[in-house]
Length: 110
Image (tube, rainbow, N blue to C red; front, side, top):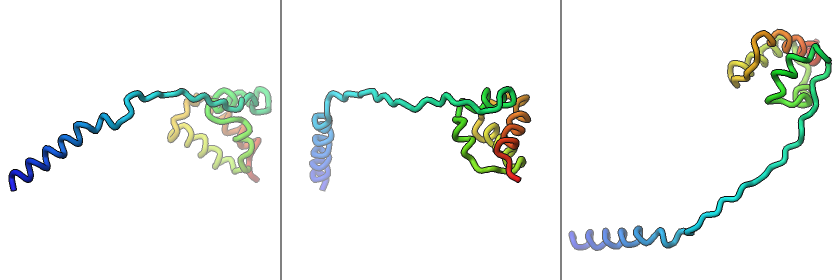
């Protein structure tokens, strides 16, 4: 029995030792370029949109936000705080009321 175990162990060792010969020796890694559409649009509203333009366009396009359904002010407030607390959006706390005011005024529900 011992000879059988030694023979099987030698066979497995021999197979595993030769395995690297089966693997491709030279792996070639190629870079891929992806062109994303430009997001040059800003939130409309002039100076009343400054806070949202300065804080939210790093992650969202204006079109994406403006195509959201109309929501009550309390829901927009919750969304802004979710972006800050959950997604760690680097939003200046002084701009939070202006962002909520803009969203409630532009996309506020009735």
